[in-house]
Length: 531
Image (tube, rainbow, N blue to C red):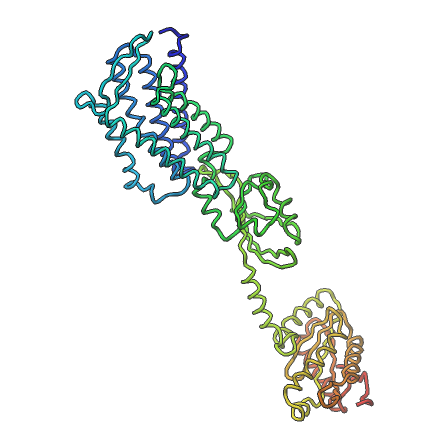
C-alpha cells in the first residue's frame, strides 16, 4: 500500500476523525458539570474514537485474520453510538423521564447483543454469513454476506437516528432562533453518518469502503465549531429553555458588559423593546426604550444580590415590579454575568396602597383621619424645627351641626361635612395638611406659615363657608364654622400642646357667638357680625 493510494489517504482522514473524537471526549470530561447530558456526549465520542481507530487499522491490515480482529474491536464502539446520540438528544430537549438509568440501559440491549454476535460469529454466522477478501484489489479489503442479526442491528441503528431527528424536528418551533444553530449541528451530526451508512449498504461508495468514519470527521469538526461559536452543550439547551420560557416572571441574562445575552417571553411582555435584535445591546438602552419612567440602575452589594421595587409606566398604565439582580457564576466560581428577575407585584402593591389609603384616609370625607393627621403633623413639626421655619395649626368645627342632623337627617349631615371639606380644599395651599379631627371638627397644619398668616387663611375659609350655603332638595341651608389658630414658636413644644392651644382659641370663638376666628394669643381676627 503506497502513501498516495486512495486507501492510504482514506486512513489518514479516518485517523484525524479519531483524534477529533478523542479531543471532544476530553473536552466533555472537563466540562461535564455544565450540562446533564455531557457524560453521554463524552461516551459517544469515546465510542466514536474506538470505532474510527479500529476501522483505520482494518484498512491497514494485510490479512483476513487481522481484519476480523479489528472488526471485532470496531463493534465495541460502533453499535452503541446511535443510542448514545438518542440519549444526548433526549437530555438536550429535557425528556428526563426517559433518561433514568433503569430506562436508558434498555437502549443498549440490542447493541450489546450485536457486540456478542460479532465476537462469536464464527460459531453461528448470524451476523456475517461469510466474510471474504475482495478479489482483484491492490490492497486487502473484505466483503460480507450479511446474516439475520446484521439487519436487526442496522434497523435498530437507523431507527435510533430517525427518532433523534424526529425529536429535534418536533422541538424546532418551540425553540428560540438563538438555539436553532445548535439544533442544526446536532441534526447534521446524526444525519450525515446515517446517510453514509445508507450509501454503503446500497454499494454506492468509492471502492466499496465504509464512509461513516470519514463523515464522522466532518461531524466532529461541526461539534468543535459549534462549541466555540454557539456554546453547544454549555449554554442553556432546550431542556432549560422550556423551563426558562414557562416562568411567569421576566428574566434577563446579561454578560459582564451589561449586554443582553438572553431573555424569556415574560420579559418581552414587560419590555416590548426586547426583540431578537436586542441580543448584544446594553440593558440601559433597551430599558429606556421600554418604559416611560426612565432608566434604572442596579447597585449590587458585596454578595452580588440586589432587590428593589420599581414603578413602571407603560402605555398609560402603571405597573409595579420587584427587581432582583444576582451574579451568574461559572462552575469554577468565576463571575460570568448577571441575571435580572422582574416579578410583577402590581396587584399586591395596589392592594397595599389601598389598605394604606383606608388606614390613613377618612372614609366619608376622603381627607386624613385623626391618627394620620397627627402622625404627619409630627413630621412637619420636626421638619420645621430643623429648618427654623414657622408652622401653624388651625382647628375648627361646624356651628350647630347637631341641629342639621336632627332637622334634616344624618345623610344630609354627611353631605354637609363633604361640602365644608370641598370649600376648604379649594382655599388651602398645596402643602397644607388637612384632616378630620373627629365628628364635625377638622384640623389643618400649615407649613411655613406664621400665626397671623394662618389666621388670615382661617378667615378666608370661614368667609367661604358662610358665603356658600348647602343646597338641599327643599331649601338652602346656611352654615358657619368657628376657628382656633396656634403657632409652634418654640422647639420643645409638643404637638398635643399646640393642638390644645388651638382648641382653647376655638372655644373662645364659640363662646363669643361662633362664626369667628381666634388666635392662641386670644386675638380675634374676625367679629361675628355676619352670623
